Length: 521
Image 1: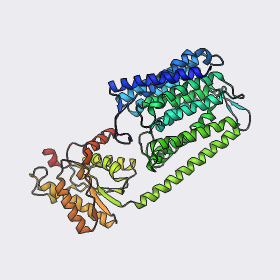
Image 2: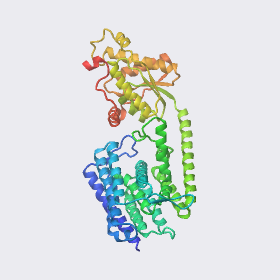
Image 3: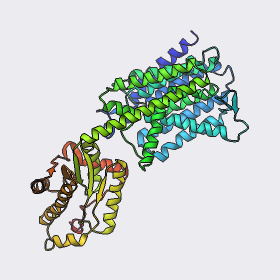
Image 4: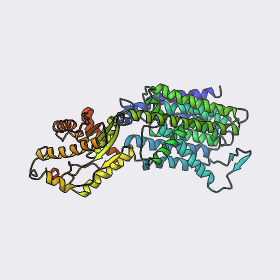
């Protein structure tokens, strides 16, 4: 009963606060809207992490005499609290104002500083060969390990938060495993067991509303909070980091593989995003959201519980098994990617600029075609304008791993082709000549390089003569014997979505077609 009552208090308080926070989020319009890389179709309120945070610490402070009955002191609890508070405040600001990644990082760093100032420390770690390695004699090694550990845990749960109920469910399992572990005879720590069970209650109360279909999301603060809380509990329980690694093993390895994969591709792993996380992969295989989270629950529970029955060397062996399991998963998905990609028809897409090409490529074309971009735009007003657009196109091609063919800038040749039509208005004969020039070069290149289809992002913009572009392309298709992709890129508000994505990615968005006459008009 001494454990059941705190658990129920945290559980019930979390339910009540989640309902209240949901209303507040809706009132202030702090919601996650459907869109790019989102799998929900309606706006879902955020700030759920606030309810978990308040429930956990409210009950923990009520039972602080038991939590601080052993080696922990008030400074440890306050450091823990203020660190979590920094994360939640940062999360609220990010959910409301969509902070940049550099500003988002400020709050996890403040949380780590608060914990260290509060006296939380790692004074020794278990030596796999026997005994302990003491860190007190190694200046700053302990704080650095704490910082790396907590950052790793926080960003693991942050990146894991992509499916309804995933982080809150894994957080519940993690807290329960730590509770069971700290009640064993060898590692008996009733204070840590109490804190872990209170966290499990708060997480479970929220999970009722967060499991698929979710009625509320954790938000930035909540996704970071779970990693922070589990990480701190692992440290203050006497450095039981191996248990936390077993619980979070697959998600941690998934994040590690994501970082390695992006670095190998020459991308900044913290600036670029993709749909290659394990939970995305399972969804792409046809798993429902519920089945996807159950797979993660099973892995976390299985490997976490294994730590209850293993000594240090046994835990290391299981961690190695986890590593090989993740490697096997990576190999299987890479083979599946290769097999699926070989089945896709090849498409050469003329790209006039990054804003018009990025959205349609990522969301409409890459799932169905082996896509290559073709940058041929001799109409651009100057070398400087050409370079600015090409830089944005190159950046996006690297981000989405799209091969890029670039034709050097030859404005004088283009000027000769439209000579005598300089006074034509926009969408007049001059523009028809310009369309045909770029489309012909695209169809010709597609034929020479063996592409099955060709297309153009000129069809993204409502300012272009869509009917003329389609007619010309169909005529060129007959002439060169290459199929034309007559997909309507403007359907489902495609132009607005392309501009919104360009703004989100921070790429160059020009305000004119490209030639000096379009500036004039």
